Length: 139
Image 1 (cartoon, rainbow, N blue to C red):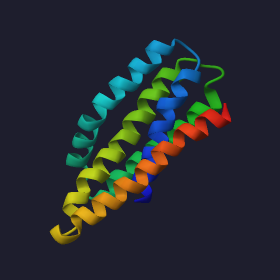
Image 2 (cartoon, rainbow, N blue to C red):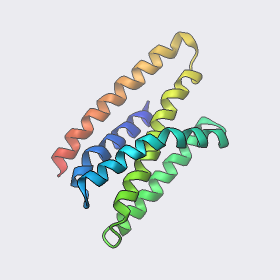
Image 3 (cartoon, rainbow, N blue to C red):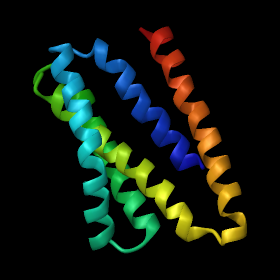
C-alpha cells in the first residue's frame, strides 16, 4: 500500500508539475504521454528478466533515486535533462504502479484479493489527489 501510494503521489506530481518545468509545455506533456505508454512494456520486460516482486520494485526505486539525484545536481547546467527526466521518472513510477497493482492479484488469496486491492487503490488515490494540492501550494 505504501509503495503504491508513494508511486501514485509522485507520478501525479510529475504530471501536475509539468506545466512549471522549463521548456515547451506541449513537448513536456508529449513526453509524459509517451512515458505512460512505455511503462507497461518496460515493467513487463523487467519482470520477465528479474524474478521476485521485491527485486523489481527495488530496481525501480534505485532508478528513481539515481535519476532524481542527477536531475537535482545538473538540471541548471543541462536543460536536456528536463524532458529526459520526465520520461525516466514517469516510466519508473508508472512501472511500479502497474506492477504493484497487477501483482496484487498473485500475492493474495481469492477471499482477500478484493479487500487488498480495494484498500490499496483507495489509499493511493487519496495520495494522488493530494499531489495537486501540494503542487499548487508549493509553486
